[in-house]
Image (cartoon, rainbow, N blue to C red; front, side, top):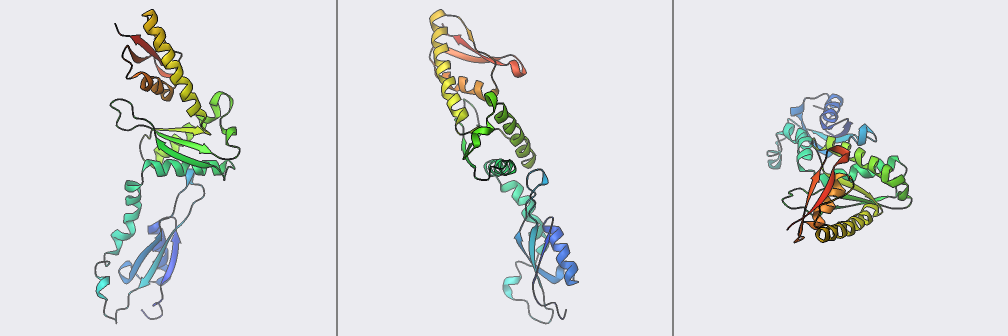
Length: 247
């Protein structure tokens, strides 16, 4: 083991690849080194902007007694492999969603944009209300598009990316400069007005088709109304909310 007493750093596509590269440079097997993970790396969105994993390998000296603190850290293999799995378990949807959207914005040339994240108001019996990601910054209004069509596309892409990263469906809403927040206030006013009409005429009021998030706002606004109940009917893009008076 002469000539390999100095620690080296190695990089790779992931932690295991970095370790393998370092072992190859040192000419030793895994049991002959202490391993420190410096950076687990990042795949980035769609595999873009990859940051390689980085590790430090310190050769063990056979002719020196092993220090007591080294005994607990001797099983190096689990330590190297663990961060990958642990990162998947510990990272939450908030961090992944915010990071994915920020990276998308950077790819669109909006490096100065910021993404504020909050949880939506939970509906009745709702255990997991959606995340609201509000994009703010210079020039971000261009992301809205005609009647919010560009914003809807950005939201779909973000959901796909986050769903893949979290290995499951993630409920989130992308807003830009409060565009949907203003729409929410308009929908709340509409809901209250249509509820009054339903009570006054004693007839069910049927609203125009709306996306799930907007229907949700109607339901939330009227959930505590003493004289009406709401119900969604229809399928797909034609799904709409009905406001039903209670006699």
